[in-house]
Every structure is written in C-alpha cells, then in structure tokens.
Length: 157
Image (cartoon, rainbow, N blue to C red; front, side, top):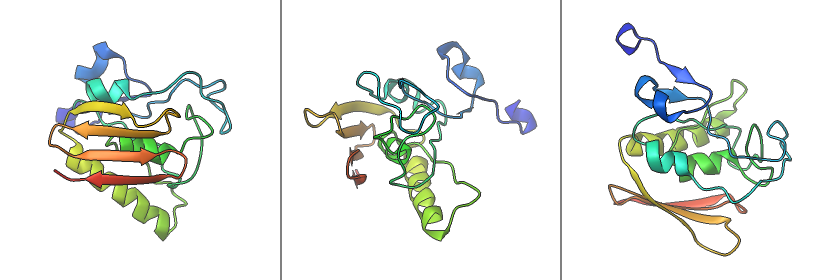
C-alpha cells in the first residue's frame, strides 16, 4: 500500500498488525464511558503502547487545544494534547482551528517529528497523584507534563 502512496491505518493498534500499519487514529485509555468528555478514568493509565511501538507507528491525539479536557477514550480530567506531548506523538488539527490552536498543533507536531524515530525508553510518575509524568527518550530528550495545569517542559538532549 505504501508503495502506491496509500497510508495503511487503523482505529486501534494490534501487535500483529504493526508491520502493516503506518498510522493508528488514536490510542485511548480505558474510561467508564469512552464516548463522554466527562468520563472517569478506570485504573491508572500509562503509555504502554508508546513504550513498545512509538518508533514503529504514528499515533495522533485529539488536537482541540492544550487545555481542552476529555474526549473519545480520554479521561475527563485529562487533556489529549498533553498525552500527545508526553508520548512524543502528533495531534490532529481541527478544521475550525484558529491561529492560536494552529500554533499549538505545530508545536506538538514539531516535537513528534523530532522524536519520530526515537524509542521511548522510560515512563515515570513523578508524584503520588499520578498527574505529573515524565518520559525519557533514546536520544536523551526528557518530557515532563502536569496533567492538572496542562504545563510541560522538554529538555533536549
């Protein structure tokens, strides 16, 4: 398919399909009601999919803004954008995006471009609330996010 200019994609990732995929449309977490923006988280989420497959498949996240919470398998307390940043993944740009949102999308996509072929080598929770998290990348890049404040830092290698 790729030789014909077609991007093979899926709604979800299955390990056996990774060699045939380029893109997975989202990587939701388990929530009480995955269609609801207000849905509660079920369990403690961590980026296992990206720890295993980050350098093998592109996984864009909802791009409704840095502070927009919840949506399609994202807990109501979490911003999908922040999961995209933490995971070194791109975010979608909605057709209704204003210039501020377009800049946020560009920022996330630039980070994803830098990390596209890097392995995520570690994920850590930084406090007992599980709301502050860190990922460490093969090239030495370190990303820390605070899911409550929607702030993040990227320390380049």
